Figure 1 (cartoon, rainbow, N blue to C red):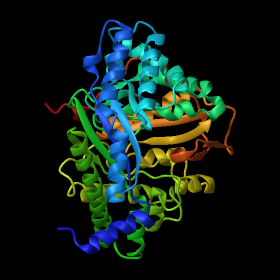
Figure 2 (spheres, rainbow, N blue to C red):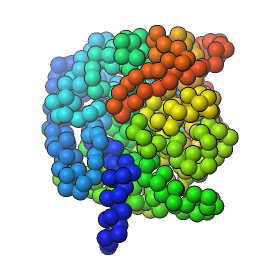
Figure 3 (spheres, rainbow, N blue to C red):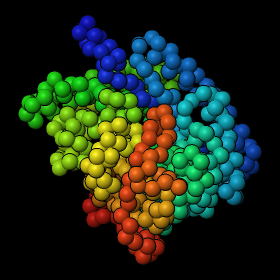
Figure 4 (cartoon, rainbow, N blue to C red):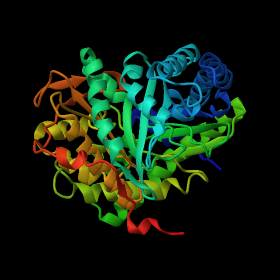
Length: 454
């Protein structure tokens, strides 16, 4: 039973502590839309997405009004398009036509973003995979709501270094084609290792082939709620600190479970998972970095940061898994720079560097996220950064990602402006020593020895 104290407490979280449901994401299987004719394939894709998700926005708004819970985004994820378009796409232009079809139906439905313009190439690339990857810069520059992801590694397979090298070029090209908007095209592209099939968060969301025909996944977020709870136990020992985070994560996840179940019922679509990630926004008081400061650091990046983040991530998961039978996606603490005012402040203060962020990704969700770097950074350097982050994911059996924006025409000391939930980012310095000979070797880095568990 829910008592009046819990109702009041939840209202406080929503009104004063930035608690929200970050996204309701409908995953849609498009494998049955494959066709040898491109126009027929595009029509099937449009019609299936429209019929499946036409009521998604209205449902989200109804739930938000009924329960008084802000639902920030309504999103769609689809089967990786490299698979769907393999039979009919013989050129980059063919894949871009599918991208524009996805963008059109997304606009018609009114959802914020669509993820799944993706390829899974951890072991090797088909012709369709390579065509889609080569088309990504134009696809993102010529659409408004499409997000793209490429999986280049996994613990079971290793890292496809050919794909990593190509992605260095692709990210740079995305930046060049959108240089008038601070290279925002690169902001909608993420490179992944060990991606989950059920992630509701962009830009890495896609509808995995192991999923049902349609599914509802919900992402909740409550950095402000956790920080406020920790303010009440300031100075207490680690046991009290951990218990407070766990209890708070439980309450936040219950809100997500409620919304997910209700959306599933109203749309007559199976409930998939609740992703209980702490996903910050640029709003003051909605920062993961501020939680780290409340734990006892002057700035994120100070000595002790990695330990504090590991503690936070683990307790969030322990609290969340008690609140829902189906916790999935990424689930943990995100550390994007541009979307977190505390992270931005830490960069400006000189406390947080790219190397420290990389160390932090060993113990939290995802990876190097929403980081702006100088526009003259070489593609091979970007590929080296990707390889480092993929190695962390592969060795540690976790999801890692790189979403990095070489901002054309800007350098260290400048600021890239993205707006809305994406915020702004100070341009961070990058190690200038060359890794060209390493990333140009070609081939695959083999899977680690502990991957052989059969």
